[in-house]
Image 1 (cartoon, chains in turn blue, orange, brown, red):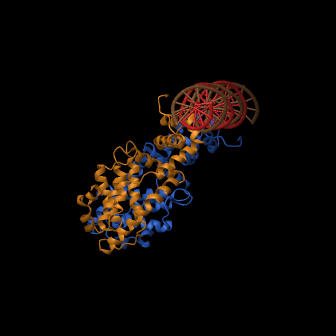
Image 2: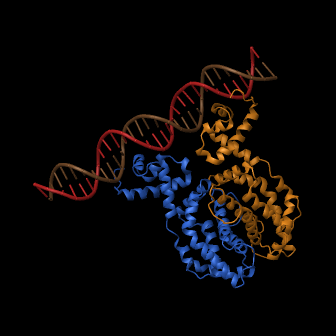
Image 3: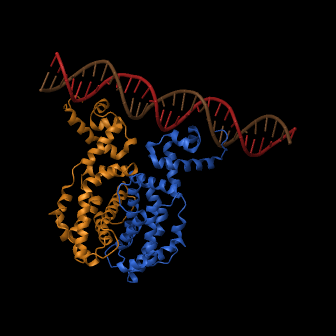
Amino acid sequence: MSNAPRLTAEARRESIVEAVQDIFAEKGFDGTTIKELAHAAGVSEALLYKHFPSKESLYHAMLDACAKGPTFAEASRILEFEASTSTLVVMVHFMISHYVLGRPGDTHRAALNSLLMRSLLDDGELVRLMHKKLAAAWLKKFEACLQASAKSGELNDVPIRKDICVWFVQHVAFSLMLHLRPKVPAINYKISREELVSQATWFALLGVGLKEDAARRYYSPKVLQLLAS
Amino acid sequence: MSNAPRLTAEARRESIVEAVQDIFAEKGFDGTTIKELAHAAGVSEALLYKHFPSKESLYHAMLDACAKGPTFAEASRILEFEASTSTLVVMVHFMISHYVLGRPGDTHRAALNSLLMRSLLDDGELVRLMHKKLAAAWLKKFEACLQASAKSGELNDVPIRKDICVWFVQHVAFSLMLHLRPKVPAINYKISREELVSQATWFALLGVGLKEDAARRYYSPKVLQLLAS
DNA sequence: TGGCAGTTAGTTAGCATTTACTCACTTATG
DNA sequence: CATAAGTGAGTAAATGCTAACTAACTGCCA
């Protein structure tokens, strides 16, 4: 490995943190050995310890890096839409397709999902960090959309707190992802992922109180092109 | 430990499988040592190997035992209700309160939740087994309730497959449980668990297409007393 | 420009402990 | 006594981590 380029301390640190993510995500903290981590990072075991005092500190450094990772461009574009029923539809569809379809080749996303699950089995810290960072604005916008929708009479007047139902939508999406994750899915939904997204979106839209005719009006390919535009 | 009673091979096997469940659930396969398992089971490490050829075989024996565990009496009583909107409401409420509230002191249930989660990170096998065993009848009844509800005009005619939306309800419940699991919950819902159950139930009922006024009519303490009766 | 010194990236080889697992042995009981 | 339940004391390999070393880059002065 003498042909490998020499990096500055900081660059090496980052490259390790980056390389280690997939391994930890797949095998978990206890299931991963220093040897595997070093191999994945393309360095000697000893060098890991030059940069991180312990396996655990490396793990936490990696989690921090995940939490600080870049926000999704798509999501932040949606945040600039006006608060309306159609934006609500777009948001719900985005959340669900995001988890169910992922983005092809986005290995980081898959790893992050694993790490989020592991976090929930552990102390939940990563999930809390992620939410703190990127959920605040999203929550606000979602609630604003619900308000707007209610004002325009497209939302049933149901006793569900408008600041909470984003979470219910997220939960449907998250759990779908979880059950689709294993090599052979834990549930056989008997339909394609695209159809599943559409069905789950319908469920979520009705769940937040959207009236049936409004859902039918707004949940169409036309509105969803906003996403691709 | 010489005052401990001597057990027959089979009884010991079962006692080990039983004792080991909580440890594996909490720490995972890789995070648990034979020493811990032996200690929890109150026997020597060597005796474990008299009954199980390896750590892994013990793990799988334990998973099998979980999958074969007793079904819930409450759930099977519900299965005998007539297919109707009120039964639908009861079922949704049951699923959600089951995951969110658990039953106090039911340590087995908490362990099972962890194991299900770990299974999803692994091969999903346990989840599939559990569903195969206890979901089939439940699914059928749920779908029948939806049909009945549609026939009586209490369900919107929405394009969601009636055989799938049980899963959406389950997903909301499951994910709520996941996020409430860590010592400090991953999400601060800002309301009590009881209220959370009620809110999530509303969301799910509307999600499956129940009309607002029907939900309001059926989702009341009165109907839910069916559960306690 | 060349060469030397100090510093920092990186590795090799190993240490102390833990871990999964085994074997020879002991003890209780029908 | 014979059989089966149960254990103490290990073993070989793996694991997390470290010490002692080498190789490359940087700045400095002739």
